[in-house]
Structures are given as C-alpha cells and as structure tokens.
Length: 116
Ligand SMILES: Cc1cc2nc3c(=O)[nH]c(=O)nc-3n(C[C@H](O)[C@H](O)[C@H](O)COP(=O)(O)OP(=O)(O)OC[C@H]3O[C@@H](n4cnc5c(N)ncnc54)[C@H](O)[C@@H]3O)c2cc1C
Image (cartoon, rainbow, N blue to C red; front, side, top):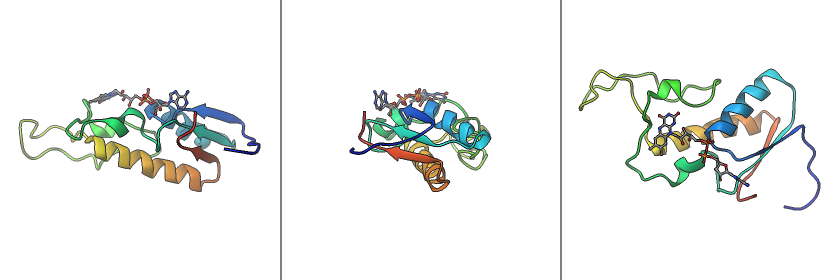
C-alpha cells in the first residue's frame, strides 16, 4: 500500500469485534474509518473455520447492530428442532462480507485486506 491515507479512526482487524465497533461508530458519527486486516476479507477467524462449525448461540443475537444475521427462523429438523437457527461458518463469513459491502458503499469506511 503506497501513499497517504487520512482517517478519523484506524481499526486493525476486521473480525466480529471490529465489525461491531465500526458498524455502531459510523451509525452514530460522521467519521472516516480505515480498516486493515491481514486476512483476505472481513470475518476474522471464521474465514479459516472448518466447514462444519456453527455459532454456539442463536444467529439473531450475533453480529453487528445494523444487520440481522439470518432470518430469525426456528430449526425444523434434527436434535435442535424448535430452537433458533445457528449460522454456519459460511453463513457468518457471507454475512460479514455483506456488512462490509454496506460499510464501504457508505463512503465512511475503506477496507484494506492482506494488510498488517
Ligand atoms: C466454532 C466456534 C463457534 C463460536 N460461536 C460463538 C457464538 O455463538 N457466540 C460468540 O459470541 N462467539 C462465538 N465464538 C467465538 C468467536 O471467536 C467470536 O464470536 C468472534 O468471532 C471473535 O472475533 P474477534 O474480532 O474478537 O477475533 P478474530 O475473529 O480473531 O478477528 C481478529 C481479526 O484481526 C486481525 N488482526 C489481528 N491483528 C492484526 C494485525 N496486527 N494486522 C492486521 N490484522 C490483524 C486478524 O487477522 C483477524 O481477522 C465461536 C468460535 C468458534 C471457533
């Protein structure tokens, strides 16, 4: 990365914690944010997770404030029949990509992957 970047906030990492912070920050303040992550995308360790892993908790209570993860549905089969859906790793990473796309198109956030 060359040149000079100007921002109000530099956020190192684009995992769940950073995404929640930036999501709330730009919702409440007119600021410019630069996010960097050594990984290739947003989502943190979920990008490296085995395909069979899922959230431990209901999807609806995970992620960033502005955007619900999942549809608030109940599971209809299996041992968790009747319980809230729990997103897979693929669903979590797709969700964070969607959230990041919204952040960057707002013009308030610039994201630099593969950067530390
Ligand atoms: C199978 C599984 C299920 C889980 N289920 C739940 C759940 O249901 N509910 C829950 O709350 N938690 C759950 N967790 C815990 C999970 O770790 C957190 O939800 C969350 O994903 C952690 O996010 P984070 O931002 O703290 O860290 P990370 O995901 O590790 O993200 C940090 C990011 O910062 C980047 N980074 C760090 N240092 C630098 C640097 N110097 N330069 C550039 N980039 C840097 C890393 O590359 C990484 O992408 C689960 C974990 C697992 C493994």
